[in-house]
Amino acid sequence: MNVKKILVVDDDVDILNAMSTILKSEGYYVITANNKEEGLKLAQDTIPHLAILDVMMTTRYEGFELAEDLINDPVCKNIPILMHTSIEVLITNQESVRDMAREYRQDPKYRELQVILLKNIDSGNAGIDYRTEDGKSVWVPVCGFLKKPMDPKKLIEEVNSLLNK
Image (tube, rainbow, N blue to C red; front, side):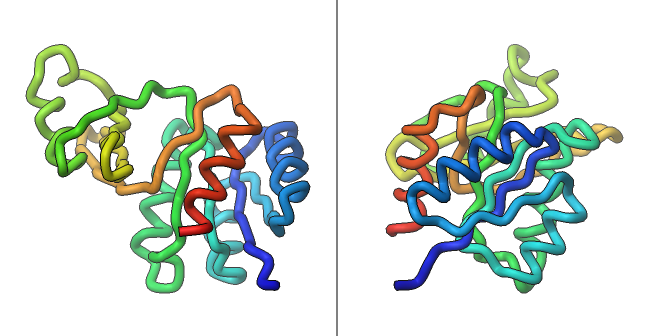
């Protein structure tokens, strides 16, 4: 049997321990890191089957930046990514979540948001549109979101869903 490796990156040791315990109890091999640099190095060295990333670590958007680094890395680009966040996720049925994020950026109610998280309810496609310090809008596609505080049942459902596709 091939044990699936999961990389969990979070600066909160209690969250790392809780997620690790839950995932290990389901038979997964868990690798942990406390920041973007450590997480990227571990991902490149171990090529996990899934990465679960916190958003705010050393910097406000470090998790988004790590997701972008993984996607742009030739070795890591196919690793599915789940973001662990307390930021509200907007649900859409529009085919392209990226196009939907761009539409939200034009709407006065959402224009000033620093972060927009979107998920298509039908296809499951998801992504992050966030503004960098210099105001540039960055799009990062991800596989989904885990809501904080962590619900162990939802964690296992999401992980199993992605790894058993």
